[in-house]
Length: 73
Image (cartoon, rainbow, N blue to C red; front, side, top):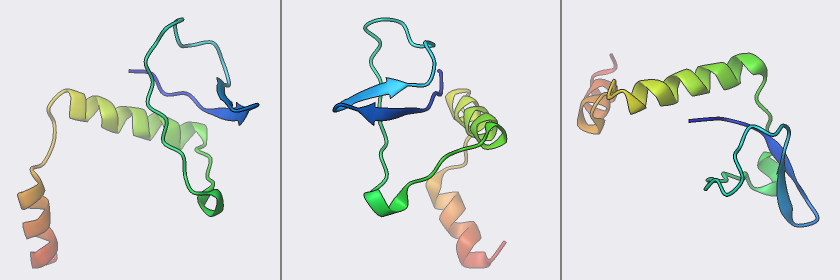
């Protein structure tokens, strides 16, 4: 999985670098106009690591997370 940033230019998403192969299928997550944000290199790396952990199956079931929140731990 690759993570890259970009901008909408003339109605099309243009990525900052050419890391995606021609014809690649992508998912675009766009904040509302008032929710604009940018990730720095460290945050992008942390996001990539978290995605890799999920891909590797290193996750916590939702019911366990909710139980922990209810217990305050």
